[in-house]
Amino acid sequence: MNTTVTLNPAVDKIYTVPGFNLNKIHRVTDPLTLPGGKGVNAARVLRQLGTEVIACGFAAGYTGEQLLAGLAEEGVDADFVKVVKGETRLALTVLDSASATQTELIESGPVITGEDLSALRSRLEKLARRSRWVLLSGSLPPGCPPWLYAELADIAHHGSAKVMLDASGEALRLGLQGRPELVKPNEHEAAELAGLADTGSEDTARQALEALLELGARDAVVTLGSRGAVAAADGQRYRVTLPQITAVSALGSGDATAAGLLASAVAGGDWPARLTLGAACGTAAAMQRAAGFVNPGDVAAIAAGVTVSVLPRG
Image 1 (cartoon, rainbow, N blue to C red):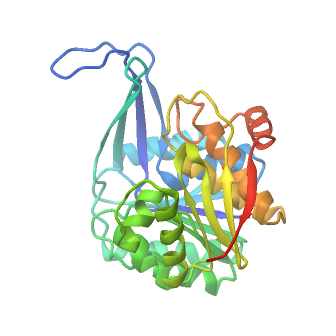
Image 2: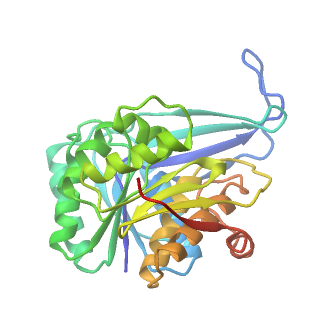
């Protein structure tokens, strides 16, 4: 089994509004409402890939019940700590196909108490003992200490599970103190962590990749959107390139990449195989309107067009 931890999940509401404008009334004819949050999205993809997974985290109030009911309906096993006060956040996304834009309005989430944190630690201790991998991903809700991911990584390691960390900002920087086996930020998050100008260049991404290793990651993958990824693993450096697709939404693409990396690791894949499946899942997810969904046929077709090459050191 494997565990995803989403401390700040959401109920996603996705609206497709061609010609979206401010100060105007828009009628939405085909809205989507589904469980969301980075680890939740990854758990959904893992299930679609046939990898055993249980989703864990915090759920609060009426929207928290919606989240759990949605996961149950999708067949995703869940073991969330129920927070007494507040509401699991709503995340609203407006996709405008006419202008190819994506607008997001995301609430901050419930305030987490010390009692809530104690319950989560106990829950993760039990789950980690049954898990091969624990994926820690997403933002920290109010009330959580910024070093929480490092603490949760230690708990997972104590249970003999490996850890993947997919976070940003201070949560990523301090989370690296927990020595995760793998980190997977995007190029903007990695550049920020390394204190580099976010130029969007591959050279910047490769510098940020090395910084991740220096800060505590054993292996690292830095995603570059439609340009692929760079990775450092087992002493090698890799460049991943992708086939061209017609993208619908980037929402949850990175979460699908994390799921593909984890699924291949569980299956015993070597690093080129892991990077191929991760890239294929992330790309396939971009072809869907909702986050955390991949078509297995798309994944297989895209994987055939993914190229993983070894980069020279230095």
